Image (cartoon, rainbow, N blue to C red; front, side):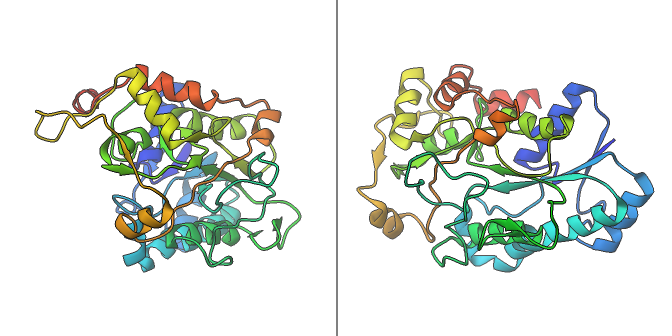
Length: 317
């Protein structure tokens, strides 16, 4: 049996669906049901039920986007920086292996050789580099709480890591949702041109769980679809697929004449309260372990060609 923390969230629900499809017994645990932010409470539950594995999808992302983290810093720190350490201590005491959904948003840009940031790259978009959003800063601290030093990209206090750390980047799939990257591009009136690695949601959770199924070595794994895309490239794929969203009134469709900010300065002045992470991730480690995701452009087009409007998604829930 598997514990899932944060199972009602966007990523957590995808993990629940994966386990249902595999016929694996699991328990999705809410904070109302069990205060898993309290180490003693979580430890007692783990010792009592002895799950085979725990998946942590709980955290604080901010809604509708990371700008919200700038005004709710206490909850952001608690959910992203403190909670992983609490879970690690509880799982260690109870002898339960586990995996943590982290983020590639602790990086910005690309490497000098354009190969993308690897699992051993030093985060360059964090509190330690003093150039990040509050959200990204807390996600980097969350990895440090698990014994990973962001200063020199090595594990501290132990020769090996104590859990899996799965780095997610900008999730998307074929279902219209406020959390879906493709939906966001179709809803925002003006877009920022940037290059990013992104993660197809169902492939992400499947790949994460496969690290456990295959009993791969514990540690960090970048879990994104191979390659990277520019915002304008994704827009062209949306146009090619002919996908449009309808307004909340259900009458006029959103315009297809996508507009872009002239540069990052205009974006920060007119649309954002905090800097954004735009980065390219290296997935060689995951692929070398035999876990392969669909190349990013193909994955995006697959999602668009099987697009499900919000009303259709709601009808199937």
